[in-house]
Length: 245
Image (cartoon, rainbow, N blue to C red; front, side, top):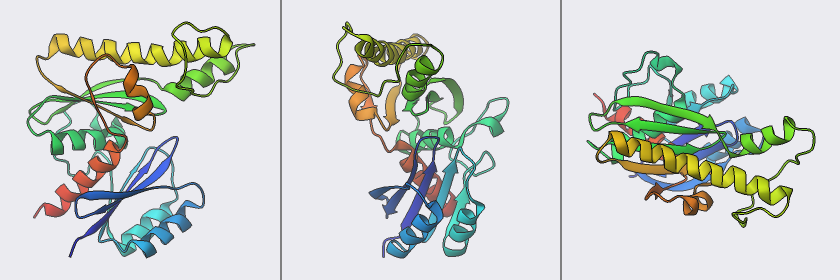
């Protein structure tokens, strides 16, 4: 009989649950409100043997109590057993979401250099080398943060929402902002990938996050895009821990 694993990703923008049956991601559930009640309903629909939580926000500890009572639960942090090492000065400061991305790279791209780029509240660049060392990366403002800061820190610029049908040369304030933010992000990401190319002869480039599908078309570099890498990385960590003796 196939086992079920529930993988919870509590990010700054969205709270999600990935349902894995055996090793296949079968459903992604967005937790909009009343999160504890939503999780109770998920457990009724999907009686799970295992669960794992990655959270970069304060969350209700009753969630951990509930999952701990009904599943074999892991709360992801720097003390969790991982399929890679973190040889940085303060591994405890590494975000749970970035740890999950590194786990995906290690699990699915064994013995390969891999750069994982995540488009979220912030853009994170996460490099895992072929020796399975998560050696770090960089962080910059994400799309919504850029739109919001331009509005909040100026007197006249409007708050703009993403619209992927935009010109290179803006013809009004809105399209100028869209071009500046979205193509600026693309140029930043391509530039950082090119900087890694100067340092490493060969590596994979993975792109993830909610806007991956729309954003990938604006990049010049060849990438592999998948919006669910964090959830798949959480599953890899759960699998690794429960396979251990």
